[in-house]
Length: 302
Length: 320
Image (cartoon, rainbow over all chains, first blue to last red; front, side, top):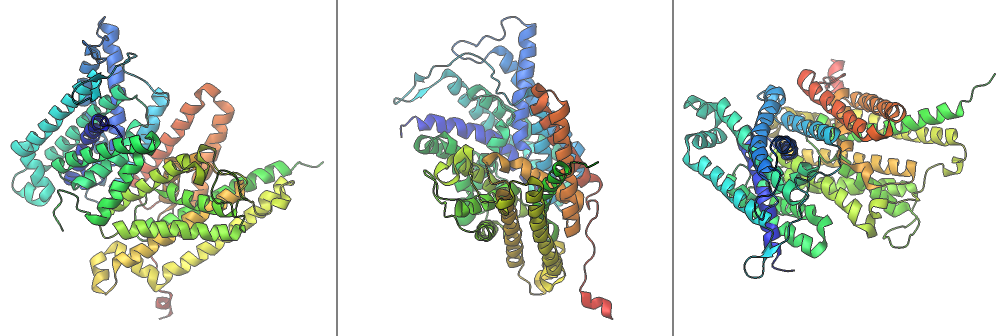
């Protein structure tokens, strides 16, 4: 095993973290495990791909990488638009499907609906784009030494910085702003929050939008680092859940920590056993947490 | 004038055998979800465990692969039930005292890992090439396809019949009533001194064992298994079968299995016949979208399904 796992582990930890925040927000505000969250990731990546090709068709030269990066201005602009689109997509799915099932009967029928939606969205992406992988850029990136003999591509370094900024932003939003306080209030006790004058429906919409936008960011990162496939988000779902549960489901800082652990563990697994066993680590984490401490790292014992 | 009946009979029996195998999976899911309210997102994984367990025990020894004990098919069936049942019990023991979502997430994880093992643990599962030479019941009739398929149809029909009668009796028994009591009002059941976690665990393991049995029966009918038979789209199909047929109702589970399987097979035939090869992958995706929309619509519009659950009370109540 080489120290290089640190770089790979941080990368996949950042990717998983961006997705796991959405899973944990949906869980804490709406109280269900959203199996369609992986599809938000794929949706965001394909939306970016489409918008970026549109931009580069309109503006000549916008598809060239900036400086040392393979990331072009078109992809950057497109990813911002795609984050908005994915937020809208999450809100639309909530409006069409989940909101109809809220508050009536068993909470688990919402989980079931999310499973059905996940399958249908994934198949729609396969229908529209086929299962052939797509790429944002044909450029090949060369890893260069950074510190202590570690190597990283310029893309990796830039994306890591972006992910850190996004995660920090979410953390500040949840802890320092009015809407963040409202979200925590709703997750503690929706009825009490409503009585105290919190706009519960607005908070729910905000949670969907945030989760969707971050999922899109995760999808763009994954697309830049690996490739874009209809199954990309679905394959990330188990690590997302493992990270969220390890961190203590409902806790955003817990989800960051969980994501880093799962990401590093995956990188080590890939080094020791080969990349085909990547997903096995997330499953082992899940089982270990359920045996040792089901409330997770940040969870309060119930 | 005589008609050639061999083809149609063989095809119809072949179709029905698969519909009935799906019905067994669906009955297993009905024990878990319909009767007890346990959400299993890893159905395909539990079916695969049964299929591989039985294949490993009953196939002749083969180089480069573990297992191959050439045991009788019946031993394979039983082992499949034990293997899937035991893993279900393990998953249940970990998650059933927690919120329902944990069970869903863990079963999803089981399906992912089983698929991973099926694809990559070549010594155990044969990898992407799968396991071949799985012994088939009535193999001596293989030269007469119609007779072979009919014999298998009779066998599977008997198995489904036995399971159906057993589950109906179980549903009316005190055990079944406790399950539904827990599903409807856990606290009330606890107040009556019932231990919900234990009953849930039993129901989950029983459902898992049935899924394993279905996996084994399917493996022995075809004689060959491969990882792509057990992907999430199988889980999805079985859910559609149960929800459309009517969860909580064993007859609904069987009818739903037949109906969805018929729709699935018919659309498959249409795609193979009418759709140009270059568009086939897309048409297959369209098929899944259609079932997804059907399932979501059903959950929103008619959550009880076609038949729905009937109120079951003790048979002693009628005698008053």
